[in-house]
Image (cartoon, rainbow, N blue to C red; front, side):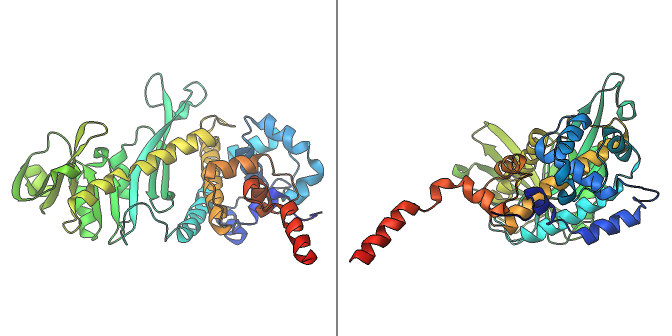
Length: 392
């Protein structure tokens, strides 16, 4: 019988604890803390994400029912909803934001060689945002009009492995295009964006850093065609042009040449026009690059459906941001475990299996070996074959 760590403890063993303690020290997270540390807070909130707890009362009831295992789970402090609520309210959310950035960097290293459908050596990023709706009466600090409140999750995602590389949580009043000012462009990388990010001055800055972009063009774009390349219309391409912007305002912001690619999406029966500063890739590859941007939409849908970031345990800005950052940390941690243990399962399936096995004292690999019972060898058949061999 296995008498080692619980599954929850084995999951948390994949956390870089030295880096976590550095994040705590940076913001004095444990200053004047008697019993319930930042680590206790993180473990309780991670437990809530892994087991789909709906409230602080839920978390308290579940963890107190396993009081004898709390020490082995790594939780040293006494569990109570008031203590956890105070921690979410007062402890700086930047502790968990910085730690999440460290986890994302570790995950990106593991998925650096992952295939995303196109044969490109360059790093490809998708930039987009999603809105998390809030109740105005409970979250008045997030109001953006008279009757609604929300926060916005700006995300730059590495398409190799669908791992976020940059996340910013702002109020809903912040325009998507403004978040480009917070990015540090990587030379040689591709940035895939929707037309909400169309700002020629910022796109010109990307070009100056030798980065590439692929972005949807607006219908009212005014330009002058310089040259047209031949295209294969059977592939969906309609034109591949070298252009210059026409209006003085646009020319001042982007004085260089652009490439304009028009593609017909037969599935949606829609014409799509893309702008890019890359003149070497084929026009079809440019269109497929933009199509791969939908991975970030899948990421947003996934975290909203399978993590607790739509209903919150606290109503303050600090509590909301703390919960979101820890939820994303759990997502990245599951992705790290999937890669390190070479699990051939989706993140959703892994999360579901974890949710009902956290208190089991069983090796993680064994938990997933039991899941793939159809692939387990037939012990009875092996024994029969062995007896026949010896009889001979």
